[in-house]
Length: 618
Image (cartoon, rainbow, N blue to C red):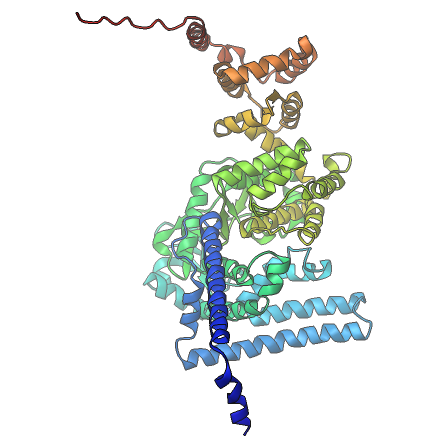
């Protein structure tokens, strides 16, 4: 009877209601298809804009799911892994809730205990969670300071795996016995990380000291299972993610997964090392180890051994080196990676940075690197210039151009918020600026406006935070902008590739900006490197003199209000003193070429063209 009653409405439903349901299903299918296309476009943008250097194997989440669910055994392993994760994290969060109910969560001893338990839980759950913990260790907007301090130990304090397993992996990858390759090798790893560990060895063929990096056995399937589980969880959090972060939760997982799996590709890491080595080849301040690709493989990398003091030992650096010079070297090398090469180290934690005896800085571990486009490099430089000039409308535009805001977002309400953040952070001078404070305030802005931090810039922010943290540990009085501003100003004033950018900065709304030029000149004063503006002034004179519009604007600036701007000119000449070789700017050939150009332009404007006579045949 109940079956008949349930069937009755269906049999009596009208054709119109059936067609309505069909149209609704079609509409839902179209919406799902549109969402999928948007996700695919966003994912493709992720590859084209933010992938690491010359990535050969692209991350495919759909293939990942198929690979981890090929048969019932794989499905069972996935289910067991899911239960293990649920139980371990559930136990930790249950303890947190119990502390809250008992009113103990604010007690320092309890908080310290829970932070240690979180570190132990993440370590137990394996590489994916260790990597997630390392990310959280640099996110003050997400996790408390006491937890961050505990999670920082995940950077280096990771248990090693059996040496016998490591040596078997080396022999399998290199196709030879350990003794045939290395004349000696350490019996224990000198460092262990979440994805592998490192041995110190000497090459038998050349007697060179090398570092041999070996991947953890079985790490790939474990991470892939975790990523499948993360993606399923992201499906449940998608509405929350879109509402609060403005993006698909699965895309966030895919960005994390892409970087982690990229770190597991040791062939890719070998290429990364070579790219960094080429960028800093012959550099007097930065040391990048060479890599031996003949003795590297899918699970092994052989590279030059770096003998120096890790930044995990700040006291030793303070005893043996000029700290201020070393800090300046480190900050400038990081800015060069970001703004000059567009290829930067994505994990410069203290364990991956060495101070050498000659004062150079050395980097190791190139599994996590990323690049930004030429366009984004220039926009970042624009953002720094706009910050210096307190042009907050343009700063908001820079955020939009960098992908923090969608194209249709109205930036007008965001401008006052940016101004407030920057004004509060700057205080009365550069010496009061702290990058971590700015980041914390900006993170509050993220929750008030439709702002999403693109993955590549999340990595940039993390890198800058880590660098500032290392610098402050070495010298508590260190101020990031006191090094960063002069570097950017010098690049803008002296880099041939940025001449057009410099012109755009100095000419705004049809007027020459004396204050901007003055700011750049002031910021570029830095005793560490002599500033030579000869080529810049030479190019600037050539561009302005040959462009009628710019020439007119420059003339108006010099003779504003029908008066010669003597004070501005004297001030500028004073700042150029010792930084300019006039005989190179106004060389005879340059003056003659410019005179010819101006005479030709004058003749074209004064002498009207004479029409060619035509004769009609009779």
